[in-house]
Amino acid sequence: MAVTSRRAGRRRSMSQINVVPFIDVMLVLLIIFMVTAPLLQQGVEVDLPEADAQPLQDEKSQREAIVVTVTRDGQLSLNQGPQVGVSLDRDVLREIVADLLSQHPGTQVYVRGDRFVDYGRVVDAMVSVQSAGAQRVGLITDPPDLSARDR
Image (cartoon, rainbow, N blue to C red; front, side):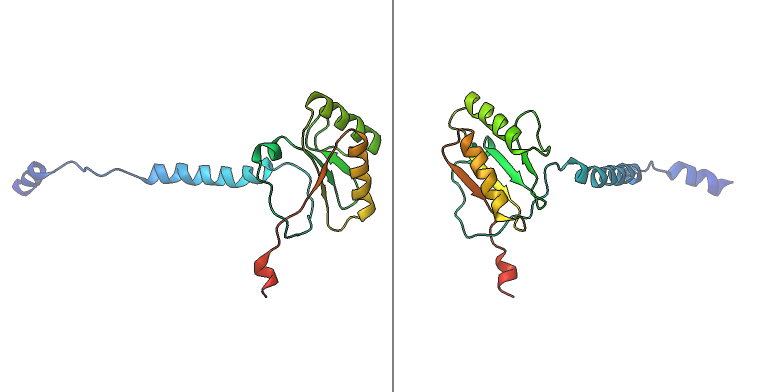
């Protein structure tokens, strides 16, 4: 018994932090973010053509620009207005763009056309936007993938 009492007198409290609950919480948060991140992306999937065009310098105009998207199957949609990302016909598209341009004159207007869509569909979208009152219409492309070109 003397040995036990000596050991009881020498005991120290542990001054280490138990990190196992912290790791558990971090793993749960990681799983939650991995599941919800793909759900946060919205918009219309378009495979843009690649071009060596220079990027626009005015980032403010790009954020507030009206973008008409032409999908692979020829459907038209807008990034602003009452029907964002919804398939629109040419007349409704023209009306919405005309309304947006009347509220904010001078707004930049761009057309994003899928690389596999018929070129006539992209031109139709540009004509619709111009008939709505847009003075200048730009085309959006992706920069070329230089690593794929070097292979």
